[in-house]
Image 1 (cartoon, helix red, strand yellow):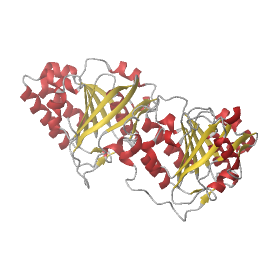
Image 2 (spheres, helix red, strand yellow):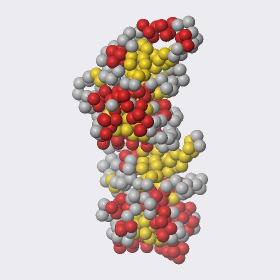
Image 3 (tube, helix red, strand yellow):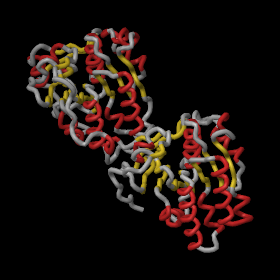
Image 4 (cartoon, one colour):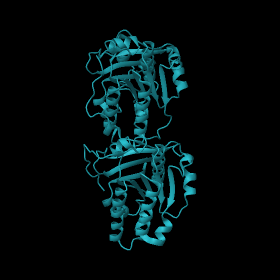
Length: 487
């Protein structure tokens, strides 16, 4: 089913869900007093979401009814949610009440169960009701038409009682649940557990939410110890236009004398710089120089790494004195050791850490690792542009490293991200006369002049040293033993 158009500028009252990221996707929360349908196959997180909604609502001092239409006892479900941070045993029976309609439904049918639900809402003063297994109502309807009549009446009765409702039901029956219930509800949310390159990715989509300016399309989510966390698609929530950097732009040195000379003093504030090169060439070290140079000037820095653990990064930067800045709290290091987490989860986690630490400088090592996270394919250009916009809007100047095989500029592994990148540095090897040389050149410097000549550099105990002229690089590139591909 295609997403229904959203209504912008809605004045409908909202009920915040308390689920991280979910209210952003919903356009502010559930419609207060409305009915929403949550569809998903078994194991997609419907019951977890329902319980999280219930306990977050109760946490605010409101009353929730969690009503099941299934034969399973509540004790089993409570054992399953006991490990989540949102679960509060002291709320059970006080602000969150677990009840069953199953026996009433079998004995009195649809109308009897609706009458009981109405009495329970009034008795407890509930302002939110979660109905688990709502698809079972259809099993007790004598005809499809009678089922539709019941759902419409349920919607009307809950609205009269000013009680917000969330109906949880399976979607693995050919869409019957959606067609049977969807017409009579205010909102429809679909949960999926998708396989991407043998990796599981959870995602959700708001099919419709009346009177709401929802964030359309699929959004990744995760089930963590905290419960469900929704990660709104970065491209859909970041500014669509390139934000201006706050205050006058100035140059930030990378902390490598010869390289800063090539860049006419450094990179501009709010810019993004891509450092390209093959494994072992020194890309990470360039980034560490950038972070250390800022810390020496009293600027906060942050490192988001994939490949090397924090202790290895600090060992690599031992000659720079970066460890002292980390211990002083000026520099923070984040590390994601695998490529299993959701792409948007990584991005939102990074931005949350930036909002907390408020760094002026950021190193992402490496952007090519982020490109391997699930759901990156087909979105990469827009995602990187959105990330660059989000960083620029926060006043962050960023350096991204990216791995190539040879370091040739023409072998850029991320050509589609070029519009989002302000500066590009290319690191490569040359091996004339059986001696390995490291070379560096500035391939791009937007809004600024730069030295286009290639220079040689070395990695010493004190970091990177770039030659003061291009003379040694010319010798390395023009040597008789130079590889035919220039690498």
